[in-house]
Length: 121
Image (cartoon, rainbow, N blue to C red; front, side, top):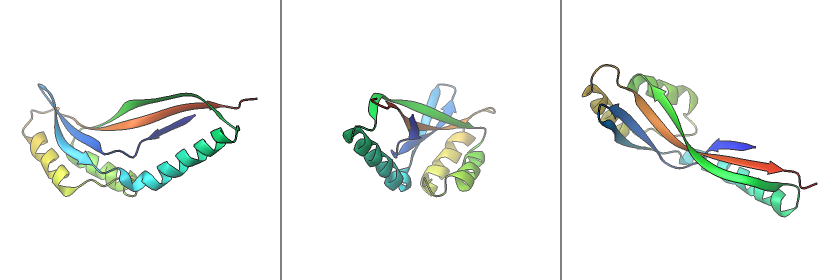
């Protein structure tokens, strides 16, 4: 199994009473070299006949926080080497969040890859 986020820009969204509003994109490209290395290794194993691809799908994975500052703290602690949260995105998220009633949430929508592989023997 290969389950991982794709190195694609991911939207920060503030939930509103009408749905959601985008604060713009987080740059997920710092993890791109690792992503490419895994893809190359998998393709080499498939080409060599060591692995056979059974299925390959993508899906959205949503991370939720109660406040913009909780999201920033999470980025600082866990994703400082894998993602860049631009200051402009953070400021827009704060403005959108502050314009909403209590109970508003902030989320990050990441595109994930789900690949299943098996031995052909």
